[in-house]
Length: 285
Image (cartoon, rainbow, N blue to C red; front, top):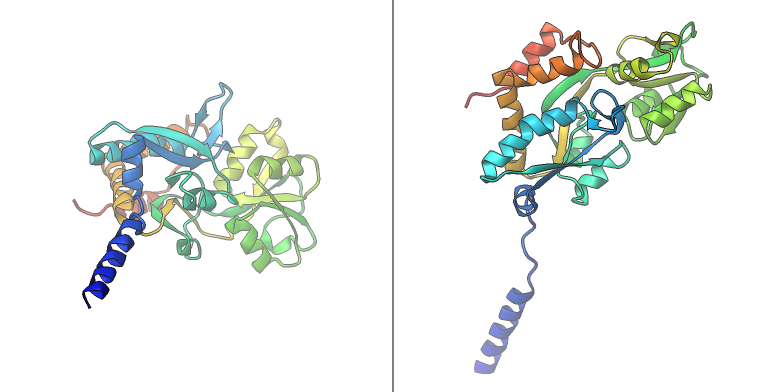
């Protein structure tokens, strides 16, 4: 009997010794590395792109650097630096789940299906899908694209909605926005569909902006949020607190004005309704 008890205790101790360690939380990882790693875009002006000075800049990057990063530094009691890695619709969720990045800060629409894979911050931008076409094109919206060659980004909500709402369109998916736009420039497709604000950014950066026009009513609702690994409530709370503090203090609206105001990179005035929506996301302290 004593031998059996001794054997049981030995096995229990061995089991304890080989038990896997608890997974590291995002805040623990950031505290250890002293770095917040975000996934963002290099060719999606003005949210994330490389400018003429070879600087990686954008609205989403500013939000992460000026609102989220200080909140994390305060929470951890140490100065945290920001590191950027390129992400795109096909790669951003794998980048999160593999721990290559801690936060996706770009043009990612918060959807119910994506919430099965990641968690989202509060909404920081609202837009909807439209079409970019050559001026004079017969395409005026989603109702008349049957048989037309339509470019979209792989893994985007736009591509999914085109498949659902316009199954007779010839959908061609591209790995990123520059590749899709290049196909439009070369006449390989008849239109490029994306969120209206992103199309406006492409148009203003095109060699001949007057050659292109954005057409159609919004055929989707696209609320952008920052994505993070699921079930990490502490990290999500810090990200949201940083964004809410920025909205409450007005810093968020200053950053918005920098990029989308009359003198910004891409004039896109915030409507009173969107401003009210942003303010209503701020919960009391």
